[in-house]
Image: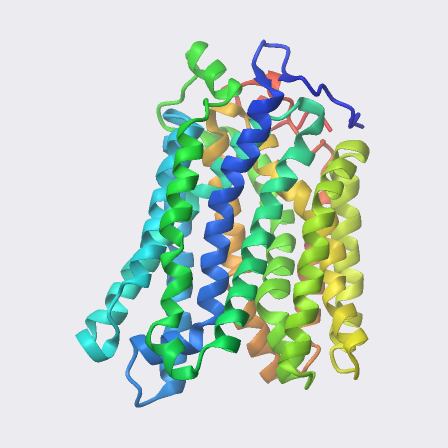
Length: 455
């Protein structure tokens, strides 16, 4: 069990890699801004999907136009694993700082480009084609962002406070989603439909340019992490990180994937689907559902750093088992509450996810870095994280909608129960511990790099 009262002055491992407290805090800010942009873009695109259907697709069939809008979003998720492979390789060969500077340019540049695109009425079929191209650029950059950001923060953080430091990256995800929800609500409530469809929708995408430049400036002023410098100094930079990650770290990658899918399903239900479910299936007013979601998001944002501290205190595995167990047990009552009248039922339904993610998200975030040796860390984390969140996270709203249509209102809950049961059994059966100490560095032997060492 880790002691949360780690060194405040510097993060030091026994091999001599040192990061000052100020550098650790700057690393948090530098990492958070990129993730916030990524998830702000994801959220605003989803909230304004009906507007995109009108602007970028033929008006003859609005249902087909809306489906096409969501299809563009889905395709951008499919390219993330490829982005993770490419960006992860550069992160492990050229440094965490390099890849984070590049990913924020891709994400903010792609987002800004959407804001200046002409619509279907102006350039015809070229409009949706260009929209797809911009989303692909964003998705490619996002594929390497999360793993690189987590590695950057965790490697700068004090060894005994790394879940706490890593939790701020998770906070940035929900800050981006909350900001997108608030921005979309502001636009739709203050602008007429004509103004929103004409120019209003462009505003949040144009904001990405100055935000991206600020993020790039902050990241350019950061030093690379002590652990990556140590890898370079000891000549442990790997020529083929993708091949080496799969060869030497397949076991921790498999275990990480097994519990990351519960976080993926829970996060995407919470952020993307539950509001729709509460209004369509539960019959609640959209304003109530959005308010409840915003309250739950704000509570989770405030609580997540404490979840990170708890994870550092009692260990990764206990937090995972508690969080996954709560999600599996409470998901059915959560969906049952959606059918009950009153705002209290709506808020309670949302809070089930917030409570479960309080325990799960800090572990998943810090594990992106901790479970893999430094020389292949960004690559291994990017591959596994993107596969989990693309296959299970990105498909969750679609699967949940299809299950409601074919299996009834509670069918999505049973799907989540099956996922969490699988994750729970894998974590419970895993005999090792779910973290690797920074001082271990890289060992090119599959048995050594597959072993999990420190809680």
